[in-house]
Image 1 (cartoon, rainbow, N blue to C red):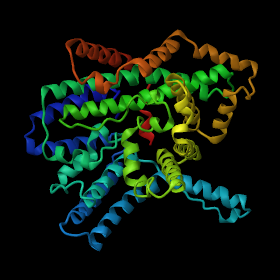
Image 2: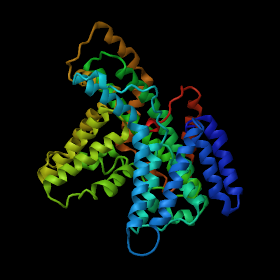
Image 3: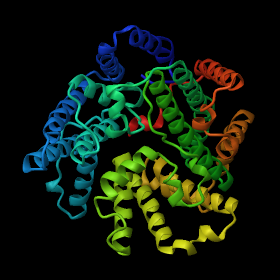
Image 4: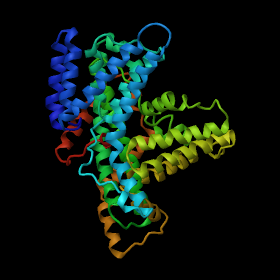
Amino acid sequence: MVFSSYIFVFVFLPLTLAAYYLAPQRLRHLLLASLSYVFYGWWNPAFVLLMLFSTLVDYGCGLVVGEPGPRTRRHRAALTVSIVTNLGLLGFFKYFNFGLENYNVLVSALGADHLQWETFFRVTLPLGISFYTFQSMSYTIDIYRGQARPLSNIIDFACYVALFPQLVAGPIVRFREVSDQLRSREHTVAKFARGVSFVACGMAKKVMLANPAGKIADTCFEAGALHVIDAWYGLVAYAFQIYFDFSGYSDMAVGLGLMLGFVFPKNFDSPYRARSITEFWQRWHLSLSFFLRDYLYLPLGGNRKGRLRTYVNLMTVMLLGGLWHGASWNFIIWGGIHGAMLAFERSRGKTSLYRRLPATAATAVTFAIVCLAWVFFRAPTLAVALGYLAALVGLAPTPPESALVGGLLYQPYYALTLVVAALVVWTAPQTWNFTRTLTPLRAAWCLVLLGISVSLMASQTFNPFIYFIF
């Protein structure tokens, strides 16, 4: 089930809200957890069992880790079980096929075809496993570090892990960010109204901007042969698609949380306005950036063990961040590009190129670097990515029939979509700020956006959020 579907907007969400507010307070978390399992199991009910297993393991480990007194071997063992279980689930379901394929390629290259491992099955990736395993794991880590108290009621913890607004595509809500809210939170008309406005803005981003931009990007990346201008046109379209798709989902998740009384963290801060790659990662997918910083970069030593170790740590974090997005060498290369740029910018310090450029130029250069890295993120294979990069610099073959692609790309509707997308990216206020004070005019504007978005859903083919596959 996706947020931008009629069954969610007109059936699941109204019934959930009605049941939630009619239920006694003591039963609300049980109700939310149960309905979240229905939401998650809509695609494949078997995956609910996997999430329940992770929930039970981390709840039990949290009870042990939360035992008072100095840290002992028992505490550390429980923490280790939690981390190993979650990473083990993530590693098996997400990387088994990738590891098997690369192993077979390696032994074949070494002339040892007889060592190839043929298996009759392939592992299906459960939706959202990258997100809920990180959240569940943060529970035991935060308790071990003394940053949160364990929950006494397993229903409350199950509600935290399975909560449907951010279950399958984030934001990654760390336990310490909502631990107090799971015990007690405020429900107000103002909070609910702001939540509706968040949902309206997020829906508009997805349906009105991300989906049309995605049509352009899909056409270009599947064309096989492109002229330079067409290639850049498609790449910018993909940059807009992934931003509005993911930030739109995050807006809707935050809004749905507010409608249920939860305040989730901000996940995007106008990332394409960044003036360096370092600043980009201070604005893009903040919940993942903070998770990797607090649970990986800092434990590795951060920037406290010398310059060389800092660069190694940055590269390690970004390579693993790329691999987290998907089991593909393309994602690893994407992470490596960002890691190399972060290390380069750190090494240059105040003499960095960005500090010598006017603000607009620095933003343009940063956006171009981000776009070039998106090629690897979007392309299905390394060969396609390299071919697309060649097209961007005019080195790809362009047979006469490639000119036909322009007839699909430059339709007024698609061109206007990209213009509007650019205006929103670089001039419009963020949803977070726009909804902070809801005047009657702003509320009316949000309702208009919601109405148009819901109407447009009927004319668009099924198009799930990009980050569902991660």
